[in-house]
Image 1 (cartoon, rainbow, N blue to C red):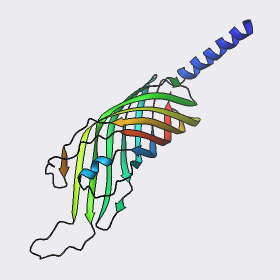
Image 2 (cartoon, rainbow, N blue to C red; image 1 turned 60 degrees about the vertical axis):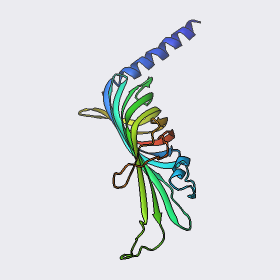
Image 3 (cartoon, one colour; image 1 turned 90 degrees about the vertical axis):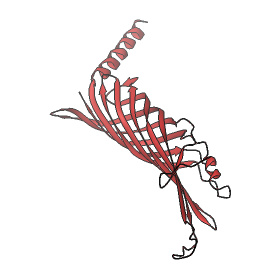
Length: 226
C-alpha cells in the first residue's frame, strides 16, 4: 500500500513538473485534411445538375500563443471540392474560413498536448456553373456562358487538437521543437438564403444553406516555450 501511494505521488509530481515546464510560448502548423459541407441544397440553382460530393480538401494553417494552459490563436482554411461535368456544364464549388480560437490544454507536457478549442469567425462558399457550349460574339442575344453564386456567414468552430512535439532544443529565447498532430471538429454557421451573384447582385429565393460539417486535419508545424 505504501509503495502504491509513493508511486502515485511520484507520478503526480512528474506530471506537475512536466506541466510547469511550459507556461509561456507559442506555436503554429500547416494543416491539410477533409472538410464535409452540404451540397444537395445547391441543386436549387439547377435541378438537372449532378449532386457534388460533400467531401472537400481542406488546406490552411493556425498559430497561437500559450499562457499557462490557456491558448489564444487564429486559424484559416481553404476548401476545394471536386468538380463534375455533364453534357451541358461543369459544376464546382469551394470556400474558406477564418476564426479566432480559444482553448485550454487539459494535457500540457513537453512531449504532447491535448486541448479543446472554440473558434469564432467568418467564412464564404461559392458555387459555379460553367457552360460547355461555344459563345458567339456579335449575336443578337448572346447567352451567358457562366454563372457563379456566393454565400458568406458568421462561423462557429468546435474542435479537439492533439499535438506531439518532436525533441526540444535549447536556444537563447527558450526551447523549441517540431510538432505533428491531428485535429477533429465540427464547423457550423447559421442557415441563410442570402446568396450573391458574381457581380454582387442578390439572388432572390436562393437555397437555404449552412456551412456546417465535420472535419479532420493533419498538423505539421512547431512550438516554442519556456
